[in-house]
Length: 149
Image (cartoon, rainbow, N blue to C red):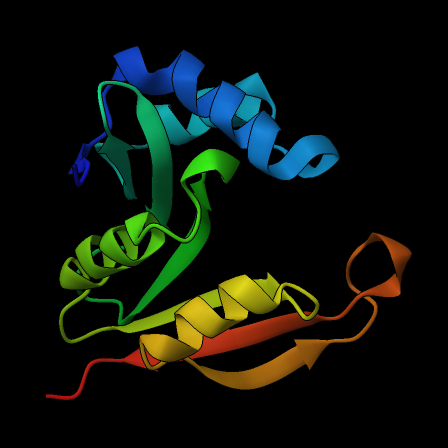
């Protein structure tokens, strides 16, 4: 069964905080950070949830007013038990559909090959690196996507 991809609601907050902790451990966003993201939903945030009766994944986008060309993909995660099942691809497809005609930027740890491969499969290209950005000295890879018009 493929999960439904739907906009997040305030009811999803506890599940997304928990999912983020499972997926990112010490790098997880705090409950305060997640609350701030939800507070900005009407302003410039889009949070989509992969739902199989429970949240199994999510994506967070910073979508400025249409007068600005660049959208930032801030966070994407799929619960470890559901990885490699296509849910990440579903979330990316839904997220990019909301970005028609705009450039999308994201950052990924250089050593996160599975995420990097997912992004490349959607046409993201590396445009820059932040050397030693992450704890332990790992580089951050900056990637860009632009829909072919």
